[in-house]
Image 1: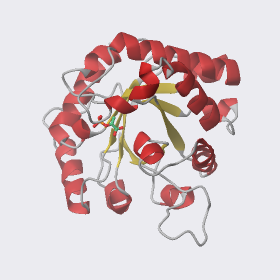
Image 2: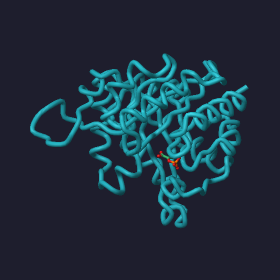
Image 3: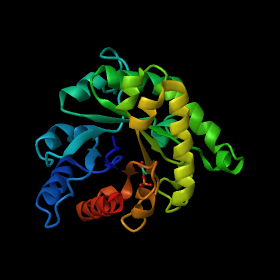
Length: 256
Ligand code: PEP
């Protein structure tokens, strides 16, 4: 079965509750509706999740940007996967480069978080990608392989099949720089191959692998035309509702 394209916004630490609701209203009332041929989610800050649940259009699913792996307990400041599921979250970003590099999250933590998200009945969006030094050393594929294998280690092939990976080169996030679509396609093809070797061909053919890093309405089509790129994880350009709609229209157009 063909994989449906998936557009996911990552709002990072932006938007108050009021601003998040204004976004939901704007895309609900947009003169250009979101094309139905693709899937959508927005990963909002924790504080906006509850309010957004009933404000987003039905076809835009609720996402979170992080989750802690313990269910509950004395973990001041953390939010568990179970708590996120309870407010209606469907997708949780795990191992975003800002978590790995600003907050020093290890592969081991990320693996536990992916597992906790799945155990709580949600779908993980596992982020992988090389930094600039690793790219210059030609280590891109080995970094992505290590992060992919470690992140998915505790999942069954069936659980992997419905998961999402986002290939996000660290140097491309928020920088305005991107790999070429061909380059991103090559890395994503090799990530899919790694999934196949470890979890089998059904999982590899079903898992959606996104590209993320400085995606804009003007450059998204080139990525979406690639056979192995199943959508995009978008930060800055997903904050503005008109830009989100433009990304959606361009994705749907490229997928035809
Ligand atoms: C991201 O936050 O995952 C991201 C890709 O950011 P940006 O689109 O702003 O580069």
